[in-house]
Length: 105
Image (cartoon, rainbow, N blue to C red; front, side, top):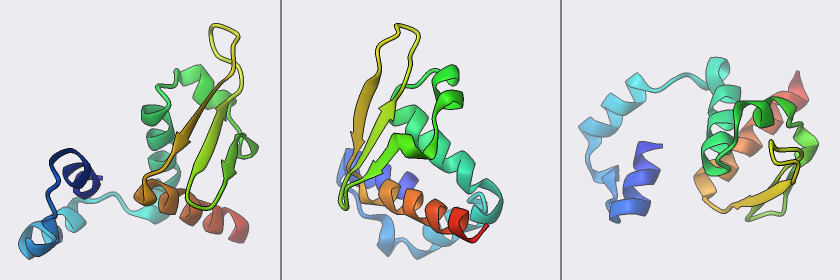
């Protein structure tokens, strides 16, 4: 997340800072335990979702179009469904990895 945000917001590529990358990897939450939390956090933040909206969402509310994810928030507090897209490759890959884990389970 930090690497992606620095790249998007400040046009900074931190891949050449090897010690920093190693430090961040040691501090990163492990996917085998926290992957679903990461996916929910990304959707919650990008979609400006309320907690009730996140609880009501299901996997079929997310449509994978290849280079874009279309997320439908079914029923909000205002009783109007909302839709937003995710175009950041890092977030799309995170979602797809979650799908692979879900298929195995």
